[in-house]
Length: 408
Ligand SMILES: Cc1cc2nc3c(=O)[nH]c(=O)nc-3n(C[C@H](O)[C@H](O)[C@H](O)COP(=O)(O)OP(=O)(O)OC[C@H]3O[C@@H](n4cnc5c(N)ncnc54)[C@H](O)[C@@H]3O)c2cc1C
Image 1 (cartoon, rainbow, N blue to C red):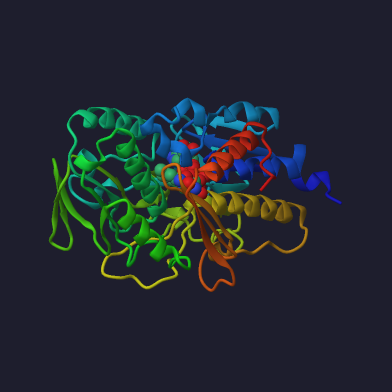
Image 2 (cartoon, protein in one colour; image 1 turned 180 degrees about the horizontal axis):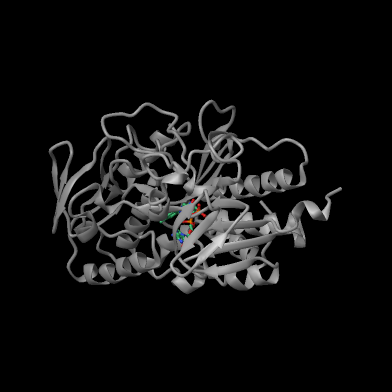
């Protein structure tokens, strides 16, 4: 039995309202009802289904197709929304400093995802495309239109310290498929560059048969690949790699590393790891403060593998982001109600559940744990159509529009 007085005046502020923050907020409200204020603060006033951005450059999706009016969903379920940028956090005062004003909190959830570190190599910001934002994906689409009339070499990949290799692999196979559809494939040399020790490492030390499957794809689609390599610098139409090689290119799309949001690094109280992510215990509570929590990409996750010649990081994908949002909501609920012990599930023990699009083909990745040791791990190719990726998108957009954050 929960006593209403336990919750009176408790205010929970969640910074970030996309995958992990959206789930945390709606789950908290579902569990606590009117017994606590749940406030989401986000500089963006919509939910964005980021995994479908890879289709925007090819015109297969418009940005509007993958947006949800999350403010209306929050309103429907009684979650308050503040459309502002967070500038810093003061844990002594228990206040979030906004561009205009402050927000006080009893419990704070950091769900603000990443900042993209374009500074990892000179020239990256100026010369490489990045499809991880609506603007970046649309700009890539415009560049492809121009490219059709003057094709040349294309370089796709991930830089040193990157962790989101999966999205870059998806884009690689989508562009290969697009080149064939445009009937210009034979005019284009296609290169894949990656910091991974081997193809299909993905920052999780691979999945059985993954490397051989990807090698087979590279051979079948005539894609040149270089592993264990980083980007030294980029110039217009030339990339200098850390192994001394130089690649000429007409078009490049590279996945840089993700680091913590600016306000995290500007808030010494948060004691962020050097990469700007939040150090948490197995229950997603801050290592040093029991009223601070983190979910999703903002969580600091130590790589479970030895660094090779070129550093790279772990992927923090949508499924674990959603899962950690649920765990944080349940643990805050248990804390405030004084009930039971916390749920503990380290990042690496969350199941892996992911569909990697491969350009109207796909690979389904399922494992009982993201990190080794695992008792079950498979990669299932589907060469007929990317039906599961499309179904997953439709399901997730439906679930989000309806505020059914409790569903898997
Ligand atoms: C191109 C691409 C493709 C991907 N494809 C897949 C895929 O196929 N499958 C998969 O599982 N994962 C995929 N991912 C990863 C997936 O997008 C992330 O796991 C997920 O977005 C993480 O959710 P999050 O809520 O932690 O962070 P985000 O989704 O990044 O949300 C963070 C929120 O915080 C807000 N915010 C940040 N800073 C501030 C601030 N200072 N003040 C206020 N608000 C702030 C942002 O506006 C944003 O709304 C992909 C990622 C990329 C880039």
